[in-house]
Image (cartoon, rainbow, N blue to C red; front, side, top):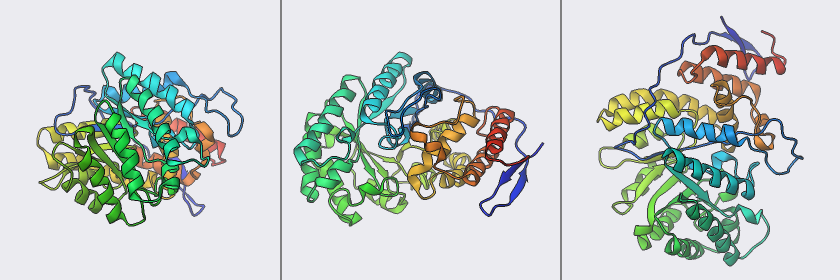
Length: 386
């Protein structure tokens, strides 16, 4: 059996899908050599009728079921991050409910969780530095009260009001002083969110790195790690070499993650990755191989996934969530291809078709015939005749 898939040039080709799934063993035990989080997507409620631009309608049962899928493989869940469409369909009240529900589910099943702390309740209105800090404090209190580790997200409001590095040092310093447990700092580059260009006080990334390192150096006991999402492996490796002992570097680089996690023989990165949402089972298998000291085996499993990751995260990178949700639907982890904010329309049909073919080649679908049937139904809706 073959399926007819469209190309970007308007032609189509015949693709022969896998007929059998690739077996992936689910093992919920903790990893030994690396700390690994998957930044998880949210599942929309397809039966809701929100007004355009209105409050996101989330299918809570399906959303939590997907988190249990990740925990079943031993992965931690990074909750209410960029992957959950914060600022792209999911507002702060929705994110707060997501945090409460996911943190409670994590406690119930013994899963590891870290939740994003930001300032999105300010909703783009002009504010001062004190208001930005208060917004961070409100969200930090909620996350910690839920029993979750906190991830201090990059703030659009802060980059808009900060006059220079000293304002970042002031805001982050105050937050770290009051944090109950060590947090993860998040450096999200403009490829993921153009509004964050110039974060840490300027456009010079070398100077920005110095500001991050100063924040950590002044509060080393309050920083579990720094998540670096710059899509720049060289810069991440340079930063992690300078982190104090005991402070982790979490790669958020969805282009170079195999080499960064494997390390260079001296240093390595841990992981907090959006691409580990669709790659969860194979990523977990690869890290368990790495736990056994088999770096070559780890790379053999994970290197082939990079072509899919680069496709999902191609520019404009912030729309990678569309491909992630498509693959979750095709894999049977949710019953539909609908996203909050209507973001299922953010990628072209040829882009989605290539994502399907690449994922199928990697054996990511537990039920290949189901994936083929669902992809065929999507193609039919778009008018592609089989």
